[in-house]
Length: 102
Figure (cartoon, helix red, strand yellow):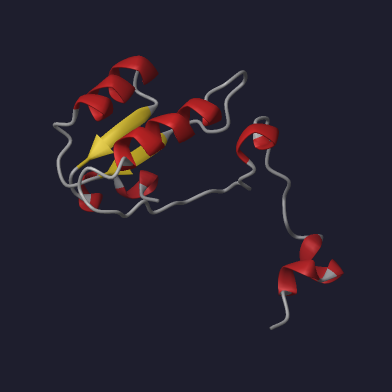
């Protein structure tokens, strides 16, 4: 399959996004992820570790949204408190304002 993003005519239309922590997490931005695993497998802990990489130094993102079954999770409350509003936890995708929807 041909990757059209490799074409010179397409590359000229792609804007370069600041990604100061790329050397730590190796994810390109914009970035969207889905973390799915059984209960007790470490999903919340993985997310906390990933976000800690995103937040080092200048930081990678202006905002983060976590959509989960229950926001009554100690690690999610910790992230919300520590981030001072930059991380929002939602139990329903449709809670997110339309202009913020990812």
